[in-house]
Image 1 (cartoon, rainbow, N blue to C red):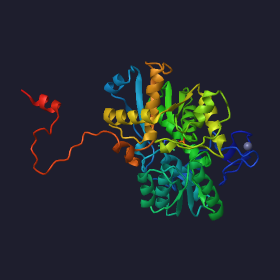
Image 2 (cartoon, rainbow, N blue to C red):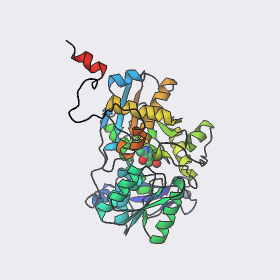
Image 3 (cartoon, rainbow, N blue to C red):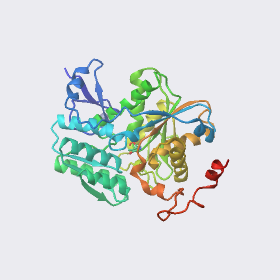
Image 4 (tube, rainbow, N blue to C red):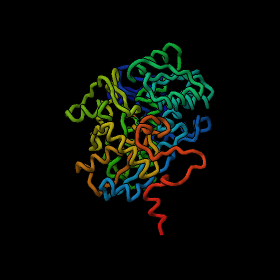
Length: 394
Ligand SMILES: *Cc1c(COP(=O)(O)O)cnc(C)c1O
Ligand SMILES: [Zn+2]
């Protein structure tokens, strides 16, 4: 008797666990389903787990000054996923997907990525001693591409947006016989691992369920992870907010129009590279994510690049958390939903901070910084700001 199987989220067709990426009957998403009692199989896998110490990230409470600045009197936490080994939550997905790939006989991996999934796949492939091919859009932030190269992976830069990279990775996986670690819903084992995020949140809040969890959203596996994790805990479900950038918001667009089917986005234009996914050819991923969001009575909202920049700045200077643009979109969305009265000023909120600020310096470098260059041995006259001088006065 099998303790686990794959099941189609749409037609319910069942498949034994294997390296397959879509339902053979209807083409929709496969999810990993395990028996209530099937702990044996999982425990067996743990000794061979490929791991760099991912997960168990801190949940940090927002300081009072930060709350005052955004006019909020409830409780706000940041789930700091920047602490994962390669700097984003994608490590959770990739660690599980790669562990399973090896158990099922992988001889190499390929991953389409807007940067973070690729860095993660490259890191874990290096750890496991497997060759990795990472396919990214040409305009991926330099820091992310450099990280991928440093781990020794082969980096392929493809013209245009993320969906072109997605397509090339599919073809490479088929041609080379490599396992596809792309972190859309394509790999059911990776997606399944994200449910641990929801469980950790529940544990860190001592079983309390926050009113809202805000999630930067591309295809949406992290949304599913949060939903599944809270479902596992059976203590109640937060309302989940799918956050996208105004320059690439296919899920929000369908939400706003009251549609159930998500349509692909044309040309993405946003500084939030991690969620710059037009979903061309796998629109079903967006539709599935939107269905999950609606089931939690959640909302989908888009934020502008300027709102993201302001949130990055506020988060770094006001809380000490250094986030890449994509990761700060959840904070921008929280501010926006509070201001609009959709999130109550006394609510409890968790913002997912999905990726590290080290991954995209350019956006920060273009902001005003309190920076001065001086000659060695320079006089302090005029060097310390007004405030410092006042503070030092008797
Ligand atoms: C991939 C990514 C996301 C989006 O995650 P999905 O599960 O694809 O919706 C959000 N933030 C960062 C930093 C990412 O790298
Ligand atoms: Zn199906």
